[in-house]
Image 1: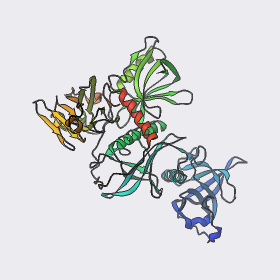
Image 2: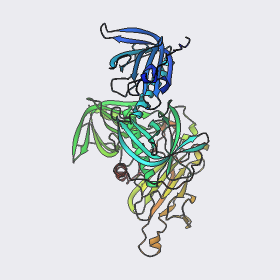
Image 3: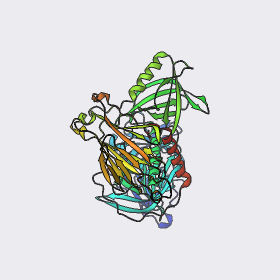
Image 4: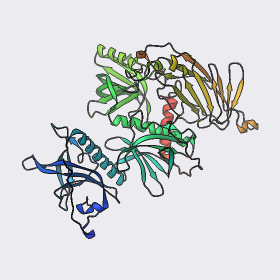
Length: 606
């Protein structure tokens, strides 16, 4: 169909509509076109409850150059037949597929076609093909996001905010955007969390994207030249068209960077829960009654659906419980192999009831909870046990990668001198090449050592498996990298002692002992007795199971610090001047601390 060219008669400046009235044809000079395509419009007649054909014309999405607000208009034969703002509302401007058609959308909006007062109407727009219909849906929802941004995200709740310095990757170099504030905002109605970067000098939003559960997006990586900088990619919604962009955020110190990482991962879990875990498939479900232990007694959370979901890409599993009334998520945690978590035990006081502890993520802050699940009879009781134990095995997608790289599982067990009962086990395998463990004073580290002289992040232990690519012939390796102020002492099996200073790195093996800190300035001057903690590393390589029996024990989160190959080095600049976000930052840090301290007797992270 040839494109219809609309010639709008000139309108005097005095007759142009104001930016807030939704727009009129005379506003063409003040607006830019986001979307323009030929389509057929229908209106629902409220009298006879039938669709009235308006005819074919130009369906447009326009954005005001000054206010940034976006609207939909439909023009036929030079006259405006539909005109409304694309608002973020529970009922209005929500596209629904028209029954019996895959290329037609229907929605309700307050139309200001020709009257001063907007009238609520029901529209239907028919495109020429399903692909065009999908393009219109993307553009329509993006226009709604632009209005949310123009209104200052008034429907979003602030979860976390921190100052920082922003960079955007363009071509082959980093472009500095300026200093400002990074915020995590949770939509009050949908529950999804978005990240925004706002420049302080002019208040402009340079980044606005939702946290997406994707292997290529929203994966935080430490910048290779800085311990205080994270980089990641996301689908940015702040410009006229959605596009994938790569950002970097530099903080004042390592503590702020660590808190941001924890807040980012917690927000990711909230978004996954709000979207209903779209990238996970159900492997087990049954009706049961859930109870939670709180205030020294068991509290019933009601009957509902107990589900075990498996991620299609990562192969990990989670337990989710939804109430029958309201479908509210009352329990949400990963199913892992752990000495304390996810260990099913029968409840002696109640028949057909399993109890266990886990790091629950159904609320805004992760929290260790103890659950009890009462089943309807012995068959369901036994079936849940079998499905729960099977969920601890990481199942890679069939045909997804080289099977030789997923044949061996390598474990690192760490014990510590200040806590004889501590025995943390960390595993790399099932397709992973390496894993980085962080040791330091901050609660967000994999291993927390909170004594004087230990830095926020003191050590990086990189567990690598060079033999996995060649059938597992060579032994696993651990490299120790010191990133501290007071240094580290490494004691090898042959009795050799090596002192590492900042940025020093060395490879070690089974039986190595690591002492931190090396020696503080006060201890060297005899002003205080030195406090030190010794970590002992024990390497093991488990028996190779067949590819369908791969399992990862301990914490399942893998931290990858290597940036993408195209990442350039950020320019080195002075530290940022910052203001404290005590209330928000302390809340995130305390939540992370509760989660870490509760599992410090084993893996240190979940």
